[in-house]
Image (cartoon, rainbow, N blue to C red; front, side, top):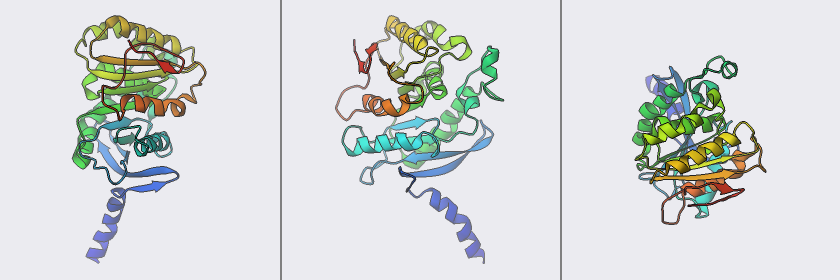
Amino acid sequence: MTFLRFLLLALPALACSTPHAADGVPPHENFQLESRHLHESRTINVYLPPHDVKTSGLPVLYMPDGGVAEDFPHVAATVDAGIREGRITPLLVVGIENTQRRRDMTGPTTVDSDRQIAPVVGGSAAFRAFIADELIPEIERRYQPGPSRGIIGESLAGLFVVETLFEQPELFDRYIALSPSLWWNDAALTESAAARLARLRGLDASVYIAWADESNIGPQAEALTATVRRAALPRLRWTAVPRPDLRHDTIYRTLENEAVRNLYPTSPGRAGSIGAAEQGAPTAH
């Protein structure tokens, strides 16, 4: 009975560590991670490259909205297809399933209407601490990846990506922000960008930012891009892609392939480029 009880208890843990595919999601693993920063357990989904590629030394792309009922399936499928076709360098994708999305993706705000979008907002610092202090070490323990870490997000998750670039830039070296909700807190991130960049002269990162036909996002993204250009940080590679032909609800799936290929190319050379872009075609300078 003791052995049987042990076996029954062990089976769920074994299942969590076995790659599996479901509902069109490429083979992946998942596990639960208890967080002292968030005071809850979080489900983590991990896409692994094809079986003949070892995980040790690979870059990792982290993603909020990373549940199997959220954006993890289509991002993992895009990465998997790109790797198999030789267009994307092999990498791991780590999806963080949401519990209170609007709490985790937003920083503090002084705007009353911002506070109405959820019972709790302004928790991005705790969420970032969870990623930095708990999730990244666990991923490194399990998979022994390389030092390169990226993050991808859309809408409020894109806001979190941009905020992280300014608040804790050393956490990632590649940032993808699709239609980031830069209107948050009366566009405070855009308004403070010049002062923040002045303190980050040594920033070494590649950024891909794109926006759709959104009047509350496009002007802020354009202003942020102009500020970055004026700052002229020598090691900040910034690709800006305005796409007025897209909508807020179509930009993620439309551009994720281009964005990931831009920052994780198989050809030699540094990812990303600085400059504004015409519709659908980034221009470097």
